[in-house]
Length: 186
Image 1 (tube, helix red, strand yellow):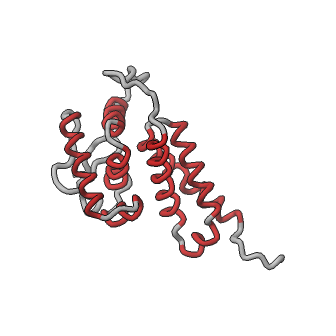
Image 2 (cartoon, one colour):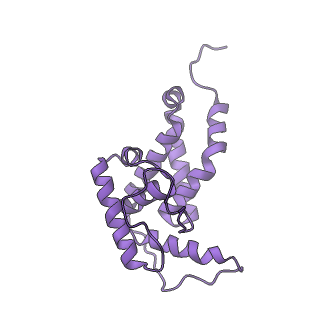
Image 3 (cartoon, one colour):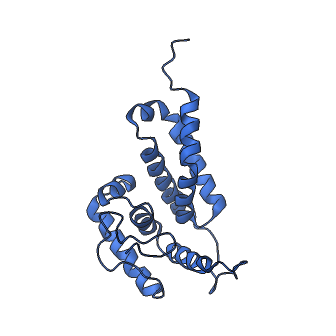
């Protein structure tokens, strides 16, 4: 042994293998683009690796990675606005999967939100985080998170009446939360 105190590379590799799919799914909901989502996760994991020694001891690697991912996304959004053109209708689905249209509608609805409101909705409803955890991840007070979530839901209800969005405060637990397919757990 060389006396090094750095955690073994295999622990970081195990973390990446175990959590990459979930991180990429969250990043996709934030960015709306698979390639951008993968880039976002890769950048967040690179920063996690640099802080791994400290994070490994505290068991906060995933929380750190998610927070980094959301902050990187907001920073990228602020720096440049992507010149994409939204269409009235999504492209026709290739198969007969009835959930595809709903997923596309939910995805379009999320992309219609400002980045901070989208992050609040993704954290609360898709990641099923508590208000305090979501606020900590975004680095804002709980009251700010509530305001962002309420404004986002109000905008989603107004802009996408065909989707069912919660009427009240975000759920404190998993019960009644909207799923990635726009369905309610109720």
